[in-house]
Amino acid sequence: MSNQFKILLFAKVKEVIGKDSIFIDLPLDESTSFNLIRKLKHIYPQISSTLEVSLLAVNQEYISRDQDIKINSNDEIAIIPPVSGG
Amino acid sequence: MEKYIKEHTLKPNEIERYGRQLITPDIGVSGQMSLCNSSVLIIGAGGLGCPVALYLSSAGIGTLGLVDYDTVEISNLHRQIGHRESSKGISKAVSLSKTISELNSLIKVNTYETTFTSETAMEIIKNYDIVVDASDNVATRYLVNDACVLTGKPLVSGSALKWEGQITCYNYNNGPCYRCIFPTPPPVETVTKCSDGGVLGPIVGVIGSLQALEVIKILTNNKEGVLSGRLLIYDGMSAVFRTVRIRGKQSGCNVCGDKPTVTQLIDYTQFCQSNYSESAGKVDDRVDKTLIITVEQFNQSIKNNNNNHLLIDVRPKIQFDICSLPNSNNIPIEEIDKKESIEIIEKLIKEKVENNNNNNNNNENRDASDELSVYLVCRRGNKSQDAVKILDEKLKEFRDKFKLLHIKDGLLGWNESIDDSFPIY
Image 1 (cartoon, rainbow over the protein chains, first blue to last red):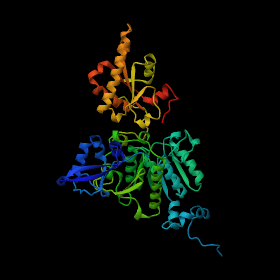
Image 2 (image 1 turned 45 degrees about the vertical axis):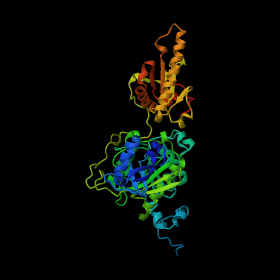
Image 3 (image 1 turned 135 degrees about the horizontal axis):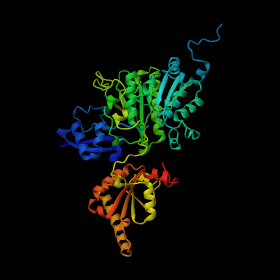
């Protein structure tokens, strides 16, 4: 059994992956923020360094990157890299 | 007997001018007085700085400070709506200040035609109540943040790229600062600049307008609604605004935390490994000099031996479509290491080599100059260096068949030194 997560992408990660959202599967007992980031880096190595400095939001709320939190399949997950242009 | 009673110092001309905002709920006389008695510093007089400055000057902010080292170019005008064609070549701070003075002669504007740096920041910032970050680069963003924390000023920060923008207020009412949210500067290679990725006028217009509104809210003490501890993301393409709750002030933050390690401004160009400006200027050589050719040498070489070369333009297709050199093949840098791209390049090289051999069989005077040259070009001669490294590796097996060279300074260099009619963007 696995959970499917919809990930909203912004700025640099959207540019590199070329989509504004993607779906990621994680096994039920491994559905955590750390595993999600790990899997994203594995599938999209080209965004690894951007992921390191990006903001991760679950249900429009900031998730500390130091803490591994449980995520549920209907959670809205967003990856928000810093934008510096203007 | 008095003709009327007016228990405040707003003058009749101010009441007339600001009437519509004066009667807006939660502004009123006290709000307008606050605006008129306040000072706001705007870092950057570009895409964001223009709308911020135009709205804040119209709203009657007593004193505006405009910082920008740069001068107005025609390519700014599609989005930097505070400048005019007639301002081409003059300081952006001065140009914007001129527009403002025609809009509202009641307010005072200070211009700083200088780069905002660790040396200049504190002296400038101390004269203002609020700071607006309308800059376009990472180093300035960290500098402005730290300067605001060290001087206790609220910071209204906006940014934009392509079809997207972000805005939030930092260091306000015990809320987080920029470093609480983004403690580590992004690696240089992951940062897309407006000059490479593009940006639309209405996107910076929306974000700049929102920044001006946050300034007005802070100054008129409408605390509850201030966009602090929340990051607003605008996706203009899908017409969606999202507000993400960001974490509060971090006790471990290096600048605003309990035990800060940054207690005075540092060298942010070093911290961020990038300059206090968006423009990259000339690109440094990162590849072996045997892999480099100048635009002059390239020009001479194709004149002498026009047929026996392959020109690969590694810009994104959207840029290649604007204008390209004759006989160039577009293989964008993002795709150049893919199998299909390498196959295409191998095929092109083989065709040229065969062609060359056939010609040489009919010609006794062959020499080393007959060797096939593969040239890589891009806009500034930056990505073509990455491309030369990739191809040097990927085409290892038959590297003896051709010379591989990246064109230093790219198409901008071509425009500068060879053909000034080549369109630049």
